[in-house]
Amino acid sequence: MSLAQRVKPRVASLQPYQPGKPIEELERELGIHNSLKLASNENPLGPSPRALEAVREALPRVHRYPDGASFLLRRALSRRLDVPEDQLVFGCGSDELLELVAKAFVGEGDEVVYAWPSFAMYPIVMRGAGADPVEVPLDEQRVHDLEAMAGAVSERTQVVIVCNPNNPTGTSVGAEAFDRFVAGLPDDVVLVIDEAYVEYARRADFPDALAWIARRPATVVLRTFSKIYGLAGLRIGYGVAGAELAGYLERARHPFNVNSLSEVAACAALEDEEHVARARRLNTEGLVYLERELGELGLETWPSDANFILVRAGEDVYEPLLREGVIVRPMGGFGLADCVRVTVGLPEENERFVKALRRIRESGAAA
Image (cartoon, rainbow, N blue to C red; front, side, top):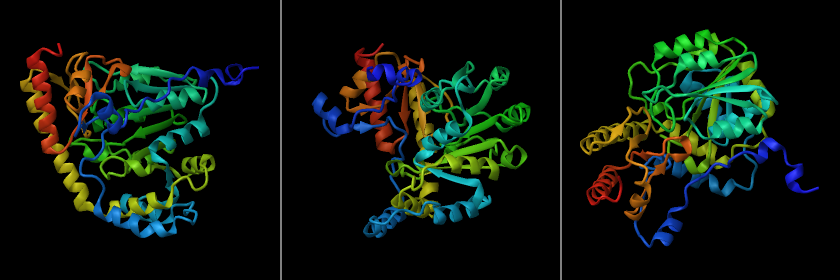
């Protein structure tokens, strides 16, 4: 019997997550230098200097296993978020928390409801766990259609996922619509609120997702240190849930899943509020600049509460931008073939992207 006959059919049918090529490889292939990566929604300021110093100090102790309970980070986040320590679960990025939810609550033939396009790992994780994804299209404004999502919930629904702000569109839902949606969900359906970009949110009525945990125990809020905290390479995220739900996720979690360098870096980054505030200001200013400049180019964008912007720039703009040394994220795999997602960079990086795009359009290299 071949491996193809032995592998689970659901796993064999999955399309693997497609990461971008390393900058060095793209430069070699295209014969360019000093390329600019605006494709992965990374913090252009990098990590807090405090986080770097904490990692340096911890390096001599990496022969020791990490603290399996993430005690220091658990205590720090408990104080910061004003939640009990037993309501926190840590993972290798918030991606792993999705895996834990799937392991704990999803089985063959169950349904998982989420908006689409949204985070690419939702279908990969949930299909791999045996679920049948129910993908609800975004509305005409590229925002979660919460009414349609509520209507998609059935007796087979185990999990509902709301990505707010949404990746890859950057759009978000406000508190009134969000609260009405959550209040109408069946109490026994697990609600996953993915807030990877919450620290960047600009809208005044952004929902208080954490408040729902006490009111609705089958709720988990996912967050990460990969974005505004600049620790994407260390892979650390966390979930906040009711004690019972958190306990089930802990049962599904591997020991030592968060390495010791990640924990000390996250603790230090959490304390550097000035660095976070600077990153937020830089991002807001960058979004305002990009919205204005792209609008002047006659290109459609959508209001973003994240650290990136979705641009309808044409189906054939990605390759010309690459040749200009600017790496963005093409959206064909999300059903948005005429769009690219552009991470907000430093001011000079944003300007370089706009100038490259202007040259491409003026030369007719992209329709």
